[in-house]
Image 1 (spheres, one colour):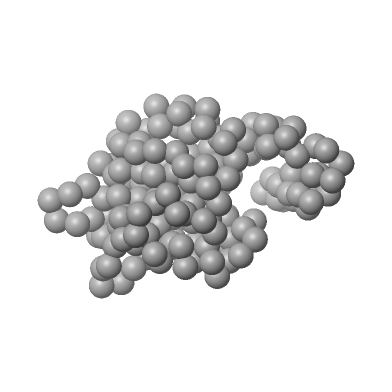
Image 2 (cartoon, rainbow, N blue to C red):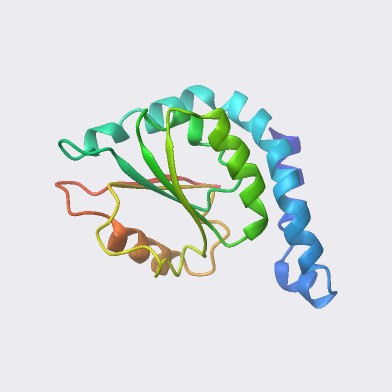
Length: 172
């Protein structure tokens, strides 16, 4: 786990430095591959924790409809295996190069319905309608957004009104 953290820290070198030296485009292309490689080991180590964490989201399923889940910062789709069967998933990530890995992850997780992949940051989910999802999942993301309060406001905005709105957070 410490090696994974080290690799992620190196990959998360301040992006303004990467951008300043002209390597941002290369970074955006390489980061999904690196994250994909790290994720398999990470999920093995946190399997039981994630299983428990996501095991309760189906209680927010509206009667007669499938559960609609928005994942902010979906990355390679590492959480898909933990989402409940029949769940409709909307994925967002600011990096468009995750699309290839998401397509693969959805193929491996036939228990889900893949709605769409939106290239967007957590701070601007304007392409997701108000009150349109039952659950917002946001794991290992808040450490990389520019504006945490705005990201949480956006998560609240897109959640349907329920007795206890849920945002799943796993801190970095």
